[in-house]
Image (cartoon, rainbow, N blue to C red; front, side, top):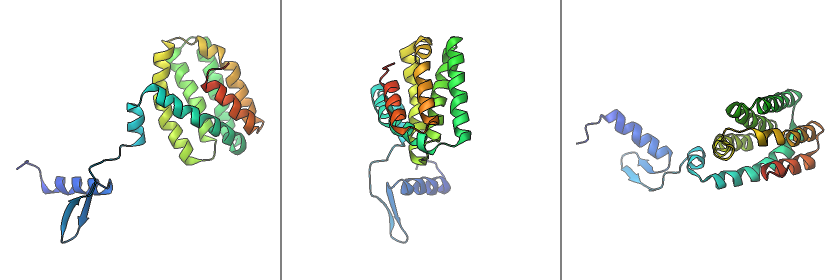
Amino acid sequence: IYGVGRSSIREAIKILSIKGVLSVQQGVGTFVVSKNIQESLDTQMSKAEIEEVLEVRSLLDSKIAAKAAINHTEKELETIKSYLDLRGQLAEENKAQECYLADINFHVSIAEACGNALLKEIYKIASKNILRTFEINHNNNTASFKISQKIHTELYNSIENKDPEKAAQIAQRIVERMY
């Protein structure tokens, strides 16, 4: 009727059963068990309002910074520092897109140093959508990145000094743009 091969149907049934939409019972049949297909977190965030993405970031940043202050390695610290320096350089050169990416990479490298793989992955997904907010809010301008370089340096220093409370406070101030 639909002009598709059996292998295509088998593959579709396999995918839908993995997603929990279908139940395959050998010798009995295939049954719909749920009409809701769970969207991936990445898909949900890309469809979310910017305010929702920022709220997620607000919840994550301070916890991730505190954990990075405790769990970072020297190599991770070097990576964080390299993105911090690059962020500052690009802000001074007014290279907006590159500066935005360096800022995101700075924060992602902190997430990678937090020692919690799940938090790191959630943050990476959120960070893809944070770039949207930069493009909308900063209009190809790096002025606020120049101003906030000092507080980002303070965040790096608190992580380097293994001070989780200070790292959490500074991260929250960055998210709330209190610098």
